[in-house]
Image 1 (cartoon, one colour):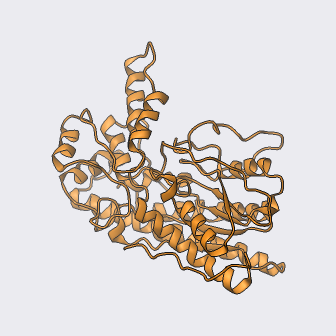
Image 2 (cartoon, one colour):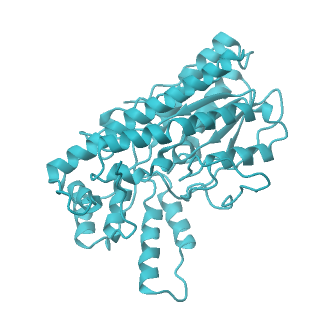
Image 3 (cartoon, helix red, strand yellow):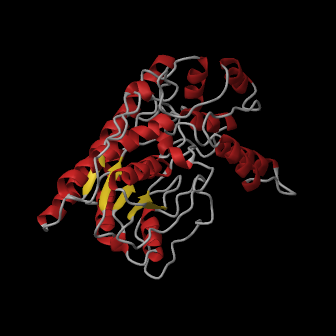
Length: 400
């Protein structure tokens, strides 16, 4: 199988293209990682995963996990405590070797993209910080796109077959192992895993700017016939559709498998897949997009292309200003640097500033919270979970 990822030596504008179409790894603000209180009166939530769990570009009060927190407070009449271990760029990773402290990079802001701490390391860190892991009532988790490498979804040199094989390999067995570990580590918790969405669809704008970006990120193998504009767009739509369908299928299958294994051992239902039901019209640069984009006119976007990225773009997310300040500090110009080092630093700075692009906006986050709430409602009403609740208020269905 030949799967093509972009070359490490992409031009500055090509790197910009990657971010404009999707950046599931990013930079910004950090909510307090308060450990759940060991109290029978409190509902304790643990959040694991990548930038989707984290809530890239969103203020805390608009993130999916926060919306779930408020919904549970309303419907349980109990305080809800949240511990957030998720961060942008996280991969599933392997189990931490015995005796190794996995807290690498925990001092970095949650919106700063990095592979580690891996999601398995996030579990380990949560266990270290909790007096009693059995007090965790709910685990919200996602993961696998960074193991696939989201850039492959932006390069039309890849094919639906490539993406299907990767999604099956990275979102199947590794996720099953992850869910098994979560259920063992937090024996009383219900576990909700949620998936992703198509970035490029037939509803994505097909203007000069988007066509130019698709070309810039297109890296066919040597000797391979190049696709024209129509072919590029069709291929990007096809591979994103395949990613969305196959990754969600694998994640849902993993949840069902682990839950069935628990039931076979006499456990109640504990592992569920939340389908946020993103539709093609919710994709990037669509009229009804549920993803962050750019706060820029068409003319300014064209100037970005003509000046090879020297004209700056701004994102329309809620943390744009704070993230920009953070990026400047993080990637401050050193006293001495070579031209190559300067180009690399400026590329990283650009990626840092635009990192929210392609992530769920407020309406997108509400779709995730809505899907999770619909799974939790019958647990409260039918099984007595968090018993003592009053009338159950169904989460408001976001405008779609």
